[in-house]
Length: 248
Ligand SMILES: *C/C=C(C)/C=C/C=C(C)/C=C/C1=C(C)CCCC1(C)C
Image (cartoon, rainbow, N blue to C red; front, top):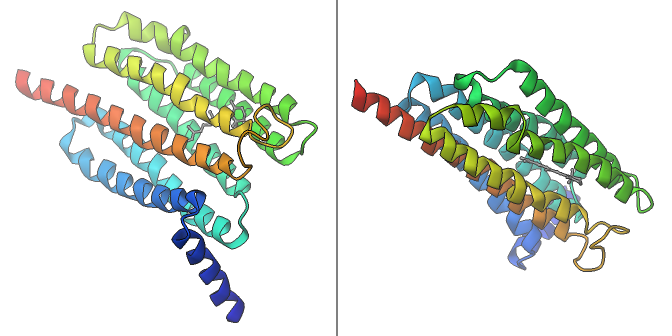
């Protein structure tokens, strides 16, 4: 009993003493939860065609909320990075983000094989990243490079592969806008993760930041990419749904 109470107190102490990592876990949890409620409730204000997209957005932030709840706790109790929870979260949510990219171009003829390629690339990225974070100082650059190959493949798909070609062949201004933002999210938003990874001991930015700041990078990036991109999908869905209403 006593140990539980004191562990709680240490945790609260961290937040009260404004440990930025602890605070971002806490805010991240709330923000993911609130976003899920928002995306689920807003499903009723968009066209049928867009309901699945909003459902997937809500699932992404919902799954993240559950993981943030545990990551926050893990960090408060141990003071170290919740790497395993982090990668379980990403292994579920990154493929769902690929589903989101696919759903955007599906009305314009996207094929299932494109989705399969995106998911395989994301799995390479995450499995290599996890091994890199847990295998120690000597090999994390090697695994980081391997992981980056998976990441670059996704960037290629969005800029020049099937996803890009389909978007070009459609004449929907809403899709064009969403594609433009998707490119920004995948290049700028997603690149925050490998920068965070580089603060690991033995990697390129090691020493420039504290090791614990890896979670600052990851938490910031998660908020931008999961909530931010969900809002992009939401705004496209609303715009397209209103257009349909105006015609009818
Ligand atoms: C919601 C979670 C998302 C969008 C997570 C994305 C994660 C990445 C883009 C991670 C990329 C990495 C590299 C490109 C190299 C180093 C290892 C990783 C896994 C941090």
